[in-house]
Length: 184
Image 1 (tube, rainbow, N blue to C red):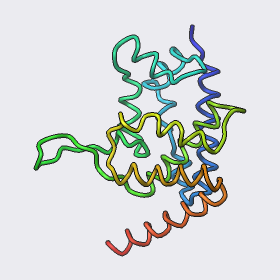
Image 2 (cartoon, rainbow, N blue to C red; image 1 turned 30 degrees about the vertical axis):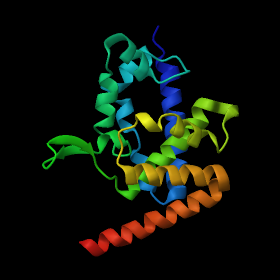
Image 3 (tube, one colour; image 1 turned 180 degrees about the vertical axis):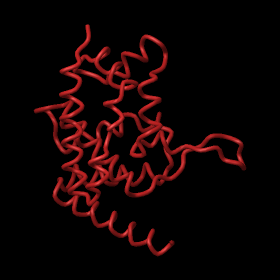
Image 4 (tube, rainbow, N blue to C red; image 1 turned 90 degrees about the vertical axis):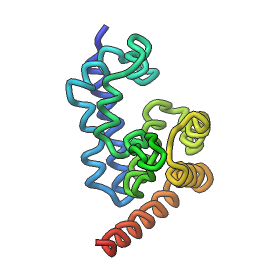
């Protein structure tokens, strides 16, 4: 059974929370562009077809076909996913994870916190995102420095709360922006 309205409401609620978080992190324009590909037919149609309200629709598509075209489309267009950041290493001749720029790690953090709030609802705590992250840590193919920064931010959220974590995140985003300008 298709659930276009429920899927639309869920992805829009999530996106709106990410936008608020991105504003707090000093990356408002990134927040406004966050996950727009979810509204394209390639992602939206499977999203409404496999919507359950309890897990990612991509899992339903993956269960049926062994892969999710919606996810492949999504991760290839959204730089806040660590899966986007892989490239062929000419030395090892293997596709390997690449260190993510700070601004996209910041967006990934905002995305994960928002996902926890939307999908866990009233049972969400500031501990929820780090618990989820640690649950998949051994299976993740992510650059070690990217993983360490995200884990640091999620741990800070669990220990010190949103206000202090977003203030810290905004500061490192600003420092990174200054450093990038100096490199040009």
